[in-house]
Image 1 (cartoon, rainbow, N blue to C red):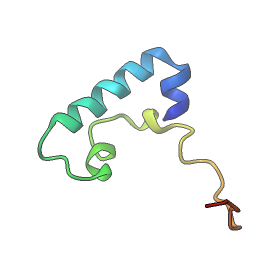
Image 2 (image 1 turned 90 degrees about the horizontal axis):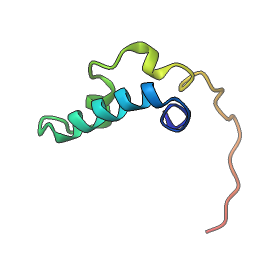
Image 3 (image 1 turned 90 degrees about the vertical axis):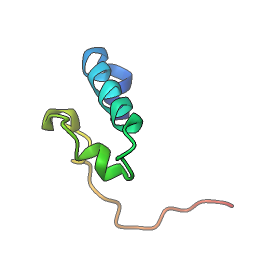
Image 4 (image 1 turned 120 degrees about the vertical axis):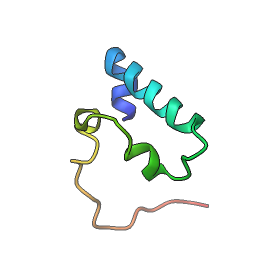
Length: 61
């Protein structure tokens, strides 16, 4: 999604509008409510096809 918002102005406008409308709707309570909305499948192209990490990430607190 970040890549779409950053690099694809036309698709980003649709995505922003859909997310804004979902957030303004008081029935929206979870991220699933947003992503289970009327967004076309193409809005998520390239988002979930990245491989999962199978190791722990190191970080400092």
